[in-house]
Length: 101
Image 1: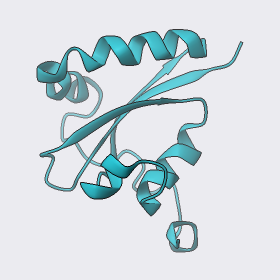
Image 2: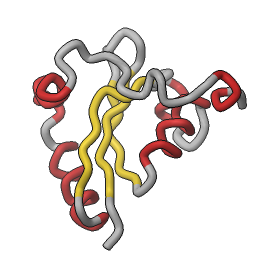
Image 3: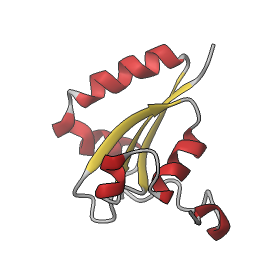
Image 4: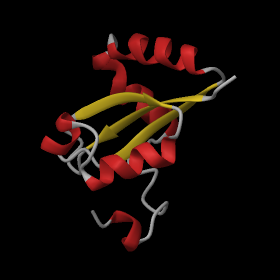
């Protein structure tokens, strides 16, 4: 079984959100922070990880992502269940060398 992660990225103003799924959360968040891998997240500078959810099997993570994409108006409430201040959960995951393109 392969673990999956459903995650939500946002910009520093918390005005735009992106929901995604990955099997390697640290790698995928780093890609977002570097502005690679997604035109949408690059365009809107969605570099802050504001929500993460580990799912025991990747196929269920995909199902969960699709479910959450239908709940757009409830994303803020969902985020606040684990991150009440809506700060970047990955703020201290990388050093400056990691973030260079």
